[in-house]
Image 1 (spheres, one colour):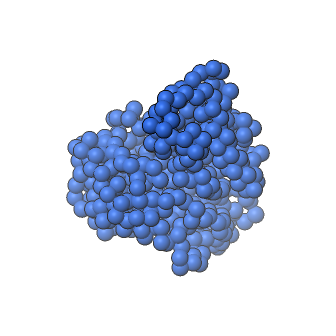
Image 2 (cartoon, rainbow, N blue to C red):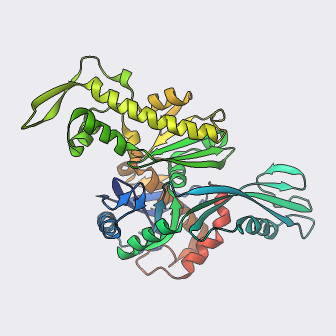
Image 3 (cartoon, one colour):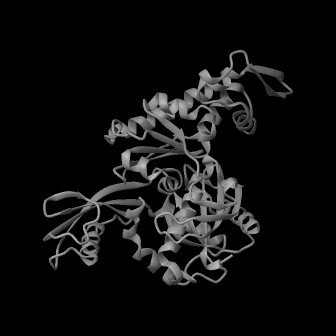
Length: 421
């Protein structure tokens, strides 16, 4: 194991905190292969709607998940890539113009145009985390993906800027630092999930990624290979569980167990006449209900969430441009019938996405929708290592302390994000 090529991802979800440690074994920057070495999970208790609400509780969850992952991997790490999401995320498009200095467009010209687009005034209470070039215009020729080497006098770039609330970001970093680790970079969770579950063809044709967590559902739309829209719906798998609690008169823990064992998101899939036993209580004794009733509750709430997502996609103007359909992922997407229900609501093809490509080692331990974000975070880190090559020594996750130049390296590669977002 080469400790200089270790990367760690941390996904603090509303229900579970998940950590993954992996080793980067491939050097191809666009799709480096990672060997999964360790996975750790802990129940989250300090988060609300994707935002840290209790730093001490969040710290405890991070420590448990990271220690489990380190024990499994047989290695200690100091720096990690942390996911962030929630209703505080905002995105906007910005333009940058630069005059071409020579006859051919060089990387320096592109960098200047990008830095002009990035130099937007960001409010004090917000923080820029991703600046993703969308496309370039050379003189009057629009829709150019890579202008380097072309002849022209005026270069224009269109950039997608993603900002987050400063306060949620600071609280997340503080919780990670209290746990004894350093945040190498904050990465937007739906973008990380897109890395691990979407194919290049899907992103090219037009696809909507729907990431269903416990507290929120995040949306990312890709078209012509680039990120075009981000959104968040303030409902998730926790709302489905809550409906089961009220509808069947069971505890939250029992509702989760029933959902896991007998749940189905597409009511027509359930056998007519199938019966399930409910946990008995002193007041109610033994009870049985038709499995269709449980499926009905799950179906109704999940359909409602999908309808809110569809409304968001329609408002963004992409509902008719999803040639590759919808990919549903996240912990709440594991229910049987989720793809069928999504296909019905969106009126297009749908599948449930889980990590699988470019993974080695203990890959089978992360092949479930709930691991999409954390595996994407590790793959994001792997891109950084593959880009840095040997020069990344000591700046990556390793048993040595991360050096101050880590942040400089991250900044230097910001514009390279266009290659995979």
